[in-house]
Length: 229
Image 1 (cartoon, rainbow, N blue to C red):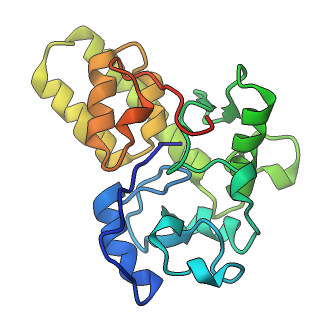
Image 2: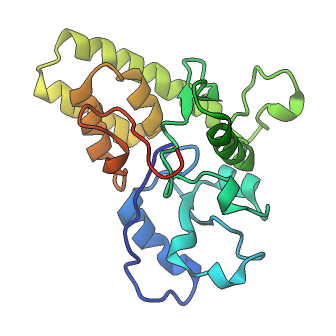
């Protein structure tokens, strides 16, 4: 899950929360803050704490992220306790998760219990670990939940481009094409995982996705702690 930095609010006050959509898109790019898929239509202002439960934060920039329809619908009006849940604008959520070739997402195995609990709460909030091979039906995606399918498609695409890159690592045209492909396909964490042994590309991915928190990565593009993760 891509760690992001929204920066200070571009406006002193929003009359209504939909008014923040263009500012969020400019700061973060049109990608879901949770599953990372590109939002090709109907992006949604996602309230970290539901506006129905915490109306005082309904138009607060600090309470906004961008959500796809699937993640936003699943999260819905669930009560959120910020002290026990990790969020990509506060913590290095990328560092806490492991992305696998079959599109499974798991908690990083070396995380201490307290950090594991934080990121697991985030996963549960949007059911990010739904996968077609899960044993229980309730843990599999519904007919309209294509997040795992899309993630798998992008993983396969990233692996193919890695093969080309390894043959011509100093070809700037090829590198530019890979970056543009990643921007179009989304799923930042997939590209960062597949290219994890290539610092030059990692840093380019970090720079290419708007709003990615640079301080969450070292000079080689590897994740470092931010906030509680």
